[in-house]
Image 1 (spheres, rainbow, N blue to C red):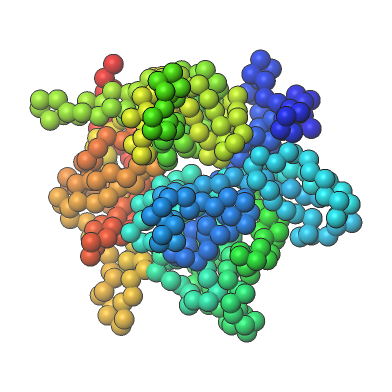
Image 2: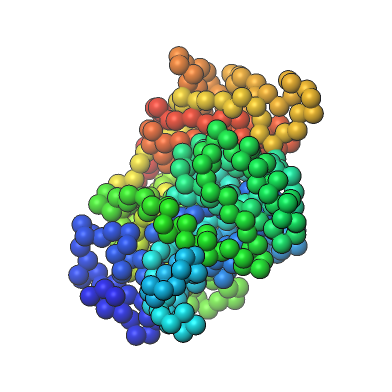
Length: 465
């Protein structure tokens, strides 16, 4: 292991801030990969095709945690779970049997007596489990904002494509995701010839999309059949994206919590916790931080006032692993001294966390160079050529705009040359020029994805001191 040593209590590499040299850090540095995931893999696809089951098979953690989700057996909020992927050091063990996965708190070297060798850590991944229901597309897009690769789940016992399969695939294309693995799940429920026929169906469906040359892996998530093939592919075919450790840290918040239980004694109260993914830079214990836009209000003229929230990092964690430093990549929890009423029930979702006065500007109007989809995704047209076509944008139309992990309402103020639209946002957003946005329109009581764009300029709000 690393020269920094291994902690005898948990078998993980020790992180020592006194010896930290950010210039030498990489996503595979032992003291980083030992405790924190350095890559985000999304699970996408239609509702009930097995996304949460695949994540449980790889990580040992069920991402469906909320009562409403358990009752309806669907993911509603973004679920996430970390997993370590290991390779056996016995050269006689052939692939894919030499790969396996364990939970995030597993030591970096684990004996594997049945294979006559040791499992050695090669990757540490964060799985973002996105909801498949069409009504929850905004949540899915928030998850896509932090993905480096995606597992596209297609159930073997249903025809392909199902409505949200198309919609999710379009969303990851918007996010310019290059690495997609298609998992043909539930093969235990069908005959071999049906599986082969569906394999051809899937090939036709993804032709010409971002998933055109993606591998299609037959899988039984429930029986854990072929999960080692998925592990191998994630290690050998998906490169770890280049990471920027030197810049000022920027973390997008995709969950926020109050960890205190009802009736907690005052002296035992803890500050609010923000969960999310660092896009660039490194956060360290005891760092002073700022969250933007922060507390949003309006003055007597109806203009927005944004007061960023200032605090200090009192704890850093990746699932059960405590951290001294957190790097870009997997999802982390940042414990702060913020009043927990401000973080309760995901109230900080869409905000951005970083060092004071070093975060991007807060925008209230944006000009977007946009591209509309030719057809609505996931809508069965039944022979009507006009049904499902995406109509042009209109002045004063209300849209839902997804920027990073933020979902904001937007009203179109006007149009410029070269397919650009000026949009007034219903709430201030911390973003910057060049960031991607997804546009959704309300159709038959649901927000449906109609296009995407890039921010070219905008009107900012000066943060209140």
